[in-house]
Amino acid sequence: MAEASDTLGIVYQNLKDAGCDERTTNNCMSFARGGNLGGMLPILKQYRRTLLGSVRSGQKKLDCLDYLIYKIQKELI
Image 1 (cartoon, rainbow, N blue to C red):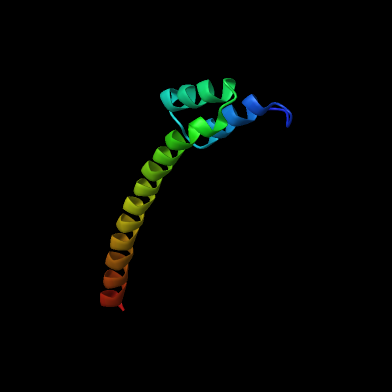
Image 2: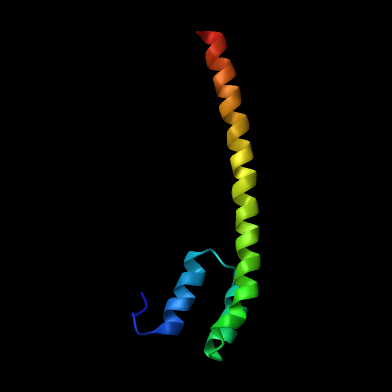
C-alpha cells in the first residue's frame, strides 16, 4: 500500500483499484509523473462512462431477472 505522502503511489493504486487496464494506467501515470494530474481527466472520464455503461447494462439484466422471479413466484402462490 502506498504511503499517504506518495502521490504517485496513491494515484497508481487508485487506478488499479478502479479496474483500469494496463494501457489506461500507463497513460494516466505518464501525466502524473509529469506533474499534470489534470491531463488524466479526459482518460478517467471516458473510463467512467465505460464503467457506467456496464452498470446500466447489468441493472437492466437484474431488472429482467427480478421480473421473471416475481412472475414465477406469483404463479406458484
